[in-house]
Structures are given as C-alpha cells and as structure tokens.
Image (cartoon, rainbow, N blue to C red; front, side, top):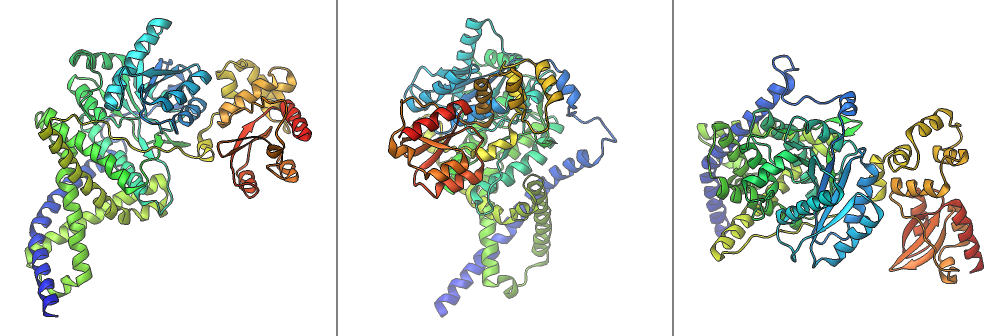
Length: 598
C-alpha cells in the first residue's frame, strides 16, 4: 500500500507541476481561436449591414448566363484500379456542365490502374489517359505536371484550348453544380476552391467521423475568415480550380513546375505561390442549394490510415512550408503561417491535456488538492473557451450531418487528439530522418474507397439531361415530349413510342445515369449451371435472369432498374456476389429463350 501511495503522490505532483504551463499555453491557444470566432461572427451575423461581402454567391440566373469555359479535370493516380472506374462513371453521369474533359494520370508500373482508365477512356470521349514517362510513385505533384503535359498535347492535336484546370482525387464525388460555380467565379478569380466535405458515416466509424467534424468546422469557420481577411487560401487538393493565366504564371515563376514535385502538399504550396504572385483567390462558402455545393469523398476509416494521411499533411504544410517560406510576410500572413504550423505544438499538447484531465478525474485529484487562486482562474477561463470551441464544432458538424452526429463531436475530439499527436510525432521523425539521410520524401499512399451505387444516386442527372447532353435528341424534342407526356408513362418509354429514340439509345442513357453496365451475352446458349443459379420463381418474381458466373460474381440481367430490396432478396439464394446489368426488353426476351434452352 505504501508503494502505491508513493506512486500516486509522485503522479499527483507531476500533474500539478504541468497545470501552470499547460494552462498558460491553452489560454493563449484558446484566445487565438476566440479571435477567429469573433471575426467569423462579425462577418456572418452582421447581416450584410456594414460592408459588402468578399464573396457574393451567384443566383441561378447568373450561373445560367455565364458562358461555359472549357475545363480540364486532372486526376493523379497510384494503385487506384479499384475505384477510378466508378469515380469516372459516376461523375460523367452527374456533372451538369458540357465543356469539360478528364485527364487521368498513371504510372507505367501500375498496369491495373492503366487498364481501368483505358476501359473508361473507351467508354467516354472526354476521358483521356496520361501515362507518366517513369515508374512511380514519385509525388502527386510530379504526376500532375505530366498530366498537364498530356493536356497540352491534346490541345495541339485537337486545336482545343482549356480555360480552367481543376484537380480531383480518385475517390471524389464532384457535385453536379460544381463546374458551373467554378465557371462563374473563374471570371474574377485566378484560384477557386470549392468546399470539400466527408461523406456521411455511421456513428461508430470514429476515424472517419473525425474528418466529418474537422472539415465541417474548418470550412465553415476558418477558411471563410482566412478569405475575408485577405490571407492566402490553401488549396484542398481536390475541388481546386486554376485559370489558365494563373497556371502559366506558376510555370513561368518556377521553371515550368506548375506543381512543386518536392512537396508532399503541392496544393497548399500553390495557394501560397499564387497569392504571392498577386492572383485573386476565393474559397466558396459552404452553400446549400438542394444539397451542399461541395466535393464529397470517403476519408480513411481506420486510425492507422488516418495517421498516415495526416502525417503527410503535417510534413508538407508545417515542416516543408516552414523550410520553403520561413516566417516572412505581412503580419496577417505571419498570423496564418502560425495557424498552419500550430499543430506541431498544439497536437501533442492536446493529447497531454487529455491524459492529465483523465488522470485527475479518475484519481479524484481535484477533491484532494486546493489549487492556488491564479491557477484556478486560468483553468476556469481555458475551460470556458473549450466549451465555446466544442459548441462551435458541434454546430458545424450538426449543420452538415445532423444533430445526433454533431452531439458526439466531443467524444470524437478525444480520439482526434490522439491521431493528430501521433501524426505530428511521425511527421517530425520522418522529415528529420529524410534530411539527415538526404532522402526524397515521396507520395504516401492513402487507401481510397468509393460509395455504394445507392448512395451515389442522390446526385444523379435527369434522364432528359443525359439524352440531350449526349446527343441522343435535341432539347426542343425533349421539351415537346415532356409537355405531352402521359401520366402513366415514363419519359424514356414515351420517347421510344414517339419514334424519337431507339430502345438501344434509351438503355445506353439509362446505363450512364444509373451507373450500371449493359448486358452483353455472347455465347449462343447459357450453361445450365448458370441458368439455374437462381430458383426459377425467384428470377421470375424480380424479372431478372442469370447469364454468367465469373470471378466470384453472378451476373444477372433485367430490363428494370434494380431496387435495394431485390439485391437483399437475391443474396439469400446464392453465395456469389451479385452484379446487375441492364438489358433492353428485346434482348431480355432473347435471353429468356437461351435460359429456357439450357
């Protein structure tokens, strides 16, 4: 017992000695955040009474009246064969804009990704593969630079000219209206940043929930304040648009290196460089027009992956940024450099604070000691500031993900402190080791995932938009059909009945809209084991037929769009994974005959 008492006494003494320096640091850090809160409150609550807002959001009329510039979307890849096909298919189907092309970069030693991009390239005329001239991985910036060169070759070969370049990642869900907003703002700004938000996640998925909280707060509060104060806007790496003039200025200022190959956060670097070159920058505030105008994506859903990604961020933003740019500039710029690099100190201290508070509560320290008055007052003020900080985070998260999710933000913040502290330690270690060894810091791979088809359908384009946009029929034909469409007939069926559209064209457009492949049944007959993979009455009930078994998948075809209940029901009859294909009613009839023959 005496030994345990001595240990507790020693632990109590250590914790009490930490209280003053911890309290002082947390007080200054809290006041720093309070300053941002007050500026945010000032330009948000002022109700547009005192001065013109820095960012004026466009009306629908403004968006429609802005002539479409040609936009190139850059997507750098390394080992993304599993997700890039889905990303391109979804975004081509969802984007409500006409003049754009995807340029997708891959490395020669990543054959699976190249094959996946080539498959999309064969399907979509506005998807183009850019193969780097050397094996990877190098850095994301290096891949982007070679994508830019591929775009120049495309322009030369096709007599085209892209006015704006956007950067995106392999898991991004580009908002259908995103390019229209970029097109509008690119008329005034050389750099446009569309908000980036994590996709909704189950409450128990804490690692991903951290991204939901932090991105919702940072882009609701910090980035608008930064933009309002005239400081440089860091690129998020995705949803970032550069005018051609801005890109050419970047190239001219750094020996044709538009994206800095040596930087792990070339996005942050470009925001800094363009501001230094005098280009106007804008962060588009998180705005809801039916849905939030933002790029959505899945972030790491395991703590180890989150730590790895954040290690790259801390290394590039705080350490490489410090090395490249020092502490130079006007007071406003110095302040935001401090904010960007603050995590090197703040993240470990936040974790230490959690440990100290946890020990004090668990051991009953507060009931066993009487703190000096000045210490108690410092702790009381820091506690009040922390309550305000927590309330703001809850509000920002609740605005995007709902009140239940938002109320759990304080619990996720404890885990976030652990993740961010480890990322800071690992970044310092990795950066120092690389410098001592003279090594190059290279692209740290982040695992990417893509949402389910049902989740993607929220942002799908109307069938009529796809039919007109893809050249299947003219807008005036669609308008006349919509005006006379019978109440009991779908628009696609009605257009076919009018002779304005073939059944094959209708199903090609449905395939694009719904992100479902069209069935191709090559064999003269269907093997008996395949035809009988589902009970006949089940296939009849759901109006589907199996036609192929391949690599653990049961391929089934049907002329109607699959419901989620159908997939659940079919799974109870087979151990194979189910892959649905659309098929025209005519081809479906032929398939039934083949199945009957089996």
